[in-house]
Length: 94
Image 1 (cartoon, rainbow, N blue to C red):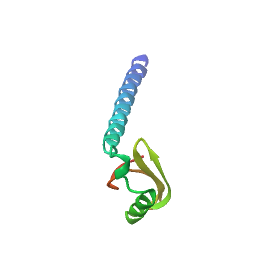
Image 2 (image 1 turned 90 degrees about the vertical axis):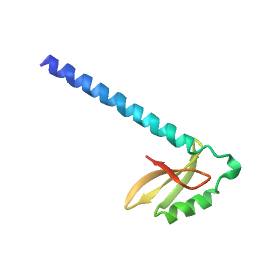
Image 3 (image 1 turned 180 degrees about the vertical axis):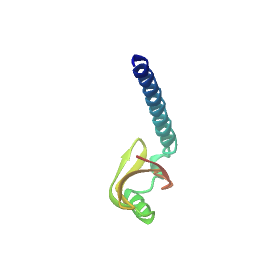
Image 4 (image 1 turned 45 degrees about the horizontal axis):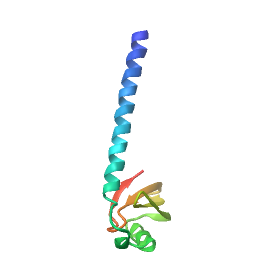
């Protein structure tokens, strides 16, 4: 029985480690897509319009780590979508 518990803990720890690495890699990838100089950014109103055009019911737009984060509803679900501030391209979601 103790071997089964130990094996379960090792499996869980391995999975948790991999999952955290995957999350870090995704965050790193998003930040590299949001490195445009501020003078090239869309306005928050333009970002809101772009997100609305893409089907989001926008509740809030804010800047986080050089990206626009759009909070709202899409397809009936709450979403947090991450956009490149210069192009308006969606680069991630949480």
